[in-house]
Length: 405
Image (tube, one colour):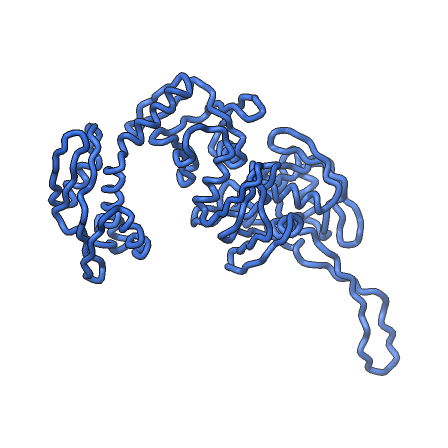
């Protein structure tokens, strides 16, 4: 769902979040000063009244579904108002009435055109909580939503801790509490939490990367899930970029056209894709169009990507990433490499010495290099505090890079 749209609610909708009070009876004047006893009735406002993205030509938009015209809403005095168009919705909200809830039952239509009947506020909250986020994870957080067999091959295992934008946390113990929280405002998953697969396997999720990996594993790809990277919106397969529109085959056997990033992201997170429909056109790193006619050709291209990024090149790239040439205006280097360093080519048993960072860079971007290599350890580094350390394998570099962040 479009969370920027959800957060930036029109001002008149925000007014709905305040409860309305009525005074019962009148106060008689007796000449004495008395403290009047005033009975008040608090009118509860359904928070989903203010979570809509607004009206359009066919209904009230909640991103993954619409409440279709005509529908009724009830105000703080219990009076019903019929809304049958975008104009009538705007006219009503520009008036003085305070609308507190919908009148049930309601008809909703999802993005695939399926119609459902909503019988009460709890069912509406459940439908809203099932909406897949299509953003909000840019800073490493993942907006909370209901993960179950309606939109995934996993179920959430309760209790689950959620955190809001102000870093306040709440614990939800069941679907109803989760639905109520998501209806109330924007929350994110707090790690770790657990998912349960369809065959009963428990998967602990400790980061946004592990959550994406679990969710997209529901798709029917034979390609490893690491082939798809959430940071680029899944729009790359290995080192090739997908060109919209393209067709995919869903797990119900139908073939659908994916028009844009949002549609693709929804299908990926729901785990509905069995395969791509061929022929499939991709764009390589040099901007050339490449067409594959079947699954075997696609896997061959992807294998070529990882052949180019052999383990030696990956290790060298990681070593290079912590040097002073990385974002010099934004961060200090993690370390300097104490050159020279050496590598050995796998099929030639030949050793090469790299004298400086320029030589490392030239090797990393050499697209004509077909021979894999391995770094020669130990490698000496000088940290920011002038401490000199040696790494004996690439795994020794991980905590150094992590401490540098």
